[in-house]
Amino acid sequence: MAVKYNRWLRSYVGHQRIFQVRVAGFIRDDSGKVLLCRRADVMLWDLPGGTIELDETPATGLVRELRQETGLIIEPNRLIGVYAGHDFEWTYPNGDQAQIVSMLLEARVVDGTLHAANRENVQLGYFPPDRLPTLLPRTVRMVRDALEGRAEAHFD
Image (tube, rainbow, N blue to C red; front, side, top):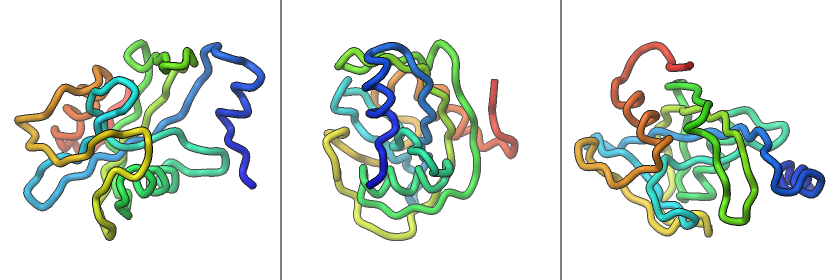
């Protein structure tokens, strides 16, 4: 049985701020719409993804998270950016604090059917880039960078 690293770590540090390494996916449908998920904890829209577990690479973590959250099987193909800093400080509803380092990977869907497959999201959908719903503040910059389509990855 795999250890849930964050749960194990929280048993020692409680709500204290910890580093979390997160990976998110930038996925577009055939018409160019962007896949977003509406988070159950803050009811804002975000890119699908989650925390990387021990012994996972960013790509395998993204594949696992997307399957769990969306029902889609994806193939990551490009690093868009690496993000951290004040915009990525986070306090979860239960009081747990985190300093998030987030990687954004472009990916394509290879199989599966879109459906909200876990309790973290209340809604999933594809949106035209010029009519995005209200995003988490940290997600705005990530989506903007992804839509620019630069060849090189963004980082601070």
